[in-house]
Amino acid sequence: MQLSQITFTRFIAALSVVYFHYGMNVFPANISYLHEVVTAGPIAVNYFYILSGFIMAIAYYKPQEKSNFNKWKYWLARFARIYPVYLLALLLIVVAKYKTLLDAPLTLPLHLSMLQAWIPGYPITLNTPGWSLSVEAFFYLCFPFLLFSIYKHGTQRLVIFTVILWLITQVLLLSLLNSDEYLPKSLLHDFIYYNPLMHFNSFIAGFLTGVFFKNNKFPILKNNTIWLFLSIVLIITLLASRPSLENIIGIKLAFTNGLIAPAFLLFIVLLSQEKGLITNIFNNKWLILLGEASFSLYILQKPLHGIYDKLIASKIPLATELHFYIFLIVLITLSILSYKYLETPMRKIINNLLDQDSKKS
Image 1 (cartoon, rainbow, N blue to C red):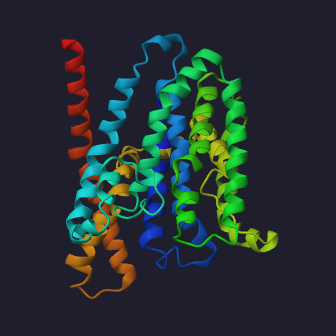
Image 2: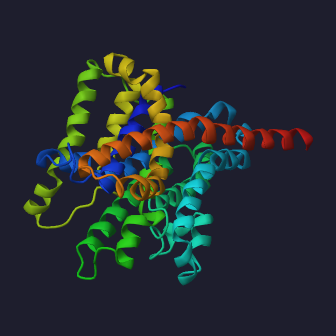
Image 3: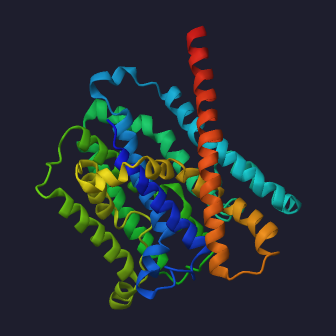
């Protein structure tokens, strides 16, 4: 099942992360009523997790062929998909920070093994966006067992577990975030925002939605395009109104751990069912290419920004906004090159090695 219209949304989400890190005060983020939407990078990462679970179900959930699923082949395929570019980005950061690595000897091993998100104090010590790949690696580890659970027991148990996990996560998140002990950039902050268990509900919710989608459990609505448009309006409204909601209810809110997952899931399902103008636009080959290159854009943004800042921004006096957009063009261009000449070839090489080993055995 091909749902290529979803691919471009990954680029939009990755772009918001870039704005969050480097474009907080440039157009259009400097427009007050757009700021929360354009710079919703941490929430966009949550969208990645939900979408990842959904896509995993679309790609691998095949009840008629359940005995053919090979978890080792799956894990290697996931490794081939993310690790080469992840390692490149990490090595670029290590070259820049090698003098300080000895001060914290666990830092590099944790990042190399993609375990940094589990240990407070370490998630964003090297390549900042890499923490989310540490979380994603945990999801990939768990995915075969989620799939086997569906095959053996159906969806009911996992639905109940996901609802309970979602509720526990939100209660824990809001309690800790609004406690007297919470401080930004503290160990508690790292647990709340980076620990894989605090994001697991989002991935499973996406996975279950994908299973239901493949089982045709979602009716196709009349005027689907209108409902899709309204789901986008709902997400934008939730993002834009978060500060106002906090003032009204008197507590801090975080949409980063699945709190607005239902809105994202509604959007994903409606977009997957969409057959009209939006799908035709999102299926444009250039937009699909941007979506495919979004992983490189996301994971390479920090090292490439460091290189750009040192080689170009520090030597050419331009307005901050102009430097941001030049960097963004450079980042997008190099991300496309990375996708075409690093990600794709390395994935094929690693997967071919697996196929050769399988034939030999």
